[in-house]
Image 1 (tube, helix red, strand yellow):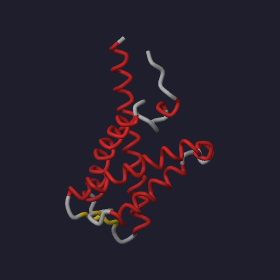
Image 2 (tube, rainbow, N blue to C red; image 1 turned 120 degrees about the horizontal axis):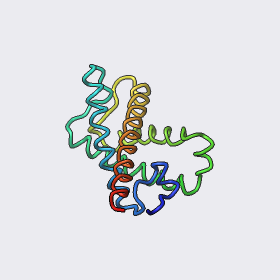
Image 3 (tube, helix red, strand yellow; image 1 turned 45 degrees about the vertical axis):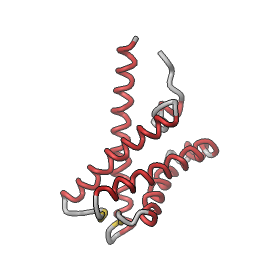
Image 4 (cartoon, helix red, strand yellow; image 1 turned 90 degrees about the vertical axis):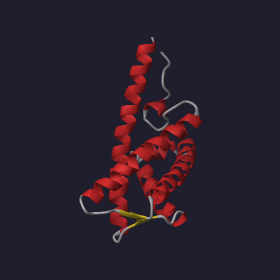
Length: 148
């Protein structure tokens, strides 16, 4: 059985090849953002306003590429600070990227209380994303176990 790398075991990298990791991360982000937006609209507290679903997809694609490129740079050069802050730096970076991407993609904007909605969106997005990453890693572990 092939041993996973340390960063792969943390869920920071989902595949040894970066191209596949980026594709898996994009799919997980797309699957994560739709329930987050829909759940808060269901409770009549919409966090974001969007023109159409294509705008949301483009927003997530751009945000994913920005997140992954910045995450690779930070993990390569500043991993000690990530461990010392217990991941809070990555949380802040995710929030900043979500906010800054709204300036690039005008189809999705945060509603009135921008900081509160951004905080709620980022927290709920990351919680659901972590759950999906755990499910993905368990499926991969079960698949590797069956192959042996």
